[in-house]
Every structure is written in structure tokens, then in C-alpha cells.
Image 1 (cartoon, helix red, strand yellow):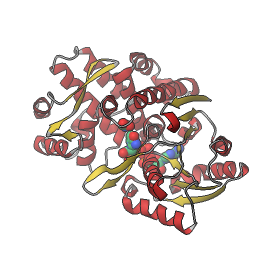
Image 2 (tube, rainbow, N blue to C red):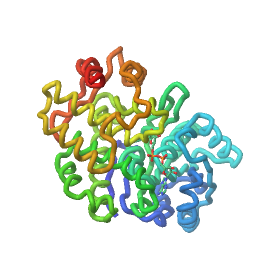
Image 3 (spheres, rainbow, N blue to C red):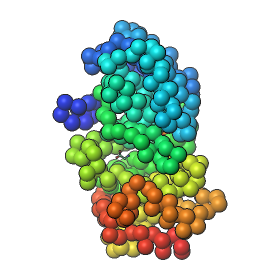
Image 4 (cartoon, helix red, strand yellow):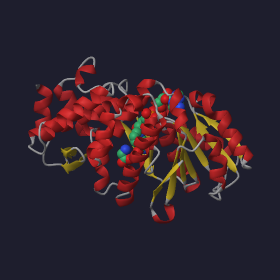
Length: 360
Ligand code: NAD
Ligand code: GLY
């Protein structure tokens, strides 16, 4: 097991990487929280891991209540947050009663938002079971739900008290979900860490075969990088925006595909476009977009808009990018690579050039 610390003063917490789910009760016992725990999950994950999690919590003296939410992005809504509040109220959960999010990013975001809001904030523990949730969504405190007018539009920054990840859970994860998470790992290599990028190039087979050493290494490195960025800029005043590399175009791809294209797949496409834009702007040499595109393709991720059927028009694309919440003060924010391992954030450059690139 490896522990990575997120350092936020009295809101600091540990990310336990490679801790078995059977350790959850013992680790939560150290947090000095209430004895009544609500485990929010979906039927897919509960069927696979519910028994182990409940046994572990009970053995540590907790009383557990499962709160089941249907499986899917379409249930990351205020209505389902309200369903969680109702279950908590009916069962007289108080301010000390922790909520555990057992599942992928959808369950993590929804449960975190419920924990931030119920009685103005109750303890919250993340138990991510997808690669994407392990390397990205469970760390850093962004929680929220979708609104019919936009994804993640309602939410709160609310840090968990603990993140516990059992890498064995990835063995039951569908291949396409694993690949979707790989896009975020590739993102960390591009924005921050050339060595991670090189490692991903050299160890593709081992990683995709879920070999413990290489898999543990990339998850740990991703968490260390995310923790480092969040430690420096928790509320996205500046630096944290680099984590949105690939997300400006990526969000438009998700929206325009009606979420048929997964988050990570959309980010993969977005990273390729951002890298091409950076090269056009003279910010990096041609090898940068080439290496990014090659790595994305090597991991079986989409690298171009040709996967979108029907392919949206340039105008539809540009409109969707405008409504993205990152379109601040009328200017879209782009995160562009200057090299493998470094990016810049710009509002002055990108929109017109993206339009040209899309039109080609
Ligand atoms: P997800 O939560 O929908 O999980 C994907 C699928 O895998 C689901 O069907 C789920 O039931 C299943 N699953 C989960 N764990 C499993 C396991 N171990 N074995 C078998 N099946 C399993 O999707 P995701 O990719 O984990 O998360 C996407 C969400 O994360 C989006 O809503 C996105 O907005 C959000 N997100 C949030 C942040 C953040 O900082 N808060 C960052 C990135 C993404
Ligand atoms: N996933 C982007 C962030 O956490 O800031």
C-alpha cells in the first residue's frame, strides 16, 4: 500500500493506493466519525463489492446503510441527490454520520455533493472503483451534479476525509472504461511529467494487462501530480486549470455526442486538438502533437472527431464550446502544451485557430 497526502491544513487527507476494500472499516475507524455510515453506490458495483465493504465496516463497529442509485451519468442529478437526502433523513443520519462513495466518478461526484450539502456538510469518504475515479475524480474535492442545461453546473468544492483505492477492483472494469481512465493518466504526462509519458509509451502492454507494478506506478504518479496541483490551487484560481487540458474540446465532444462518447475518450480527442493548436501557435515542435496522438492511439483511444456520427458542423462545435463554463468573460480558455511535461493557459489564442483546424 502507498499513501499520498493532500495537504490542505486541517482539511488534509490521505489517498491510500492499493489498500484492499477489506481495510475500509479499519481505516475509517481512525477518522473519529459517527458510527452510522451510508454507502452510496449503484447496482453494478454493489453486486461486485458491496459484501466486502459492508463486512469490513461492520467488523470495525459501524452500522451500514446502502443507498442505491441507478447506474449511469443521467442519474448524476439534483433529483438523485435529493433521494440521498431523503434516505439520510428517514434514517436519522446526523452531522457526524459519514457518506461513503463506492463506485466510479458518477457516484463520487453525486455522493460528494450530497455530503457537502446534507446538514451543511458531513464526513465523506471516496472509494473509487474505476481508473478514472482513482486517478482524477476522487481526488481534489470537485463534487457536483449535472443540470439539463450543462454538465457539472451545480456543485461544491468539498474534500473527502479519506480516499481508499483497491487496485484489484480494476479487474472487473470493462476494457473501454479502463481506457477512458487512461486518457486522464496520459493527460498528467503531458501537463506535468515527461517521465510518466515515457513510462506510458514503454509499458503499454503491462499496464493494459493490469500488472500490479506498472499499474500501481501510474496511479500513484497521477495521484501525486493531482495532489500537488490541488495543494497549490484548490479552487482553480489559476494553476488547477491545467488539469483541464483536453477538456475544452472534450466537453463539446461529450455534449454533442449526447454522452455516447465517454469522458476520457472525449478528453483524448480534445488533447490531440489542443496539441495541434499549440504547434500551429508555434508553442511546441511537431513531435509533441505526433507523440501525443501516437500514445492515445496506442491505448486504443480515439484521436479524431471522425468517431462522431453524425459529425457536428464547425458552427455547432464552436457554439457548444462557447456555452462551456470555461468561456469566461467571452473568451474560451485553452490549455496548450509547450512540450511533453509542460503547458500554458491562454485566453488570447485558440478560438479562431480551432475553427480553422475543425474546418480542414
Ligand atoms: P462511471 O462512474 O459512470 O463508471 C463507469 C461504469 O463502470 C459504470 O457503469 C459503473 O457502474 C462501472 N463500474 C465502476 N466500477 C466498476 C468495477 N470495479 N467493475 C465493473 N464495473 C464498474 O464513470 P467514470 O468514468 O468513473 O466517471 C465519469 C464521471 O466522473 C463523469 O460524471 C465526470 O464528469 C466525472 N469526473 C469528475 C471529476 C472531478 O474532479 N470531480 C474529474 C473527472 C471526471
Ligand atoms: N478534473 C479537473 C479538476 O479536478 O480540477
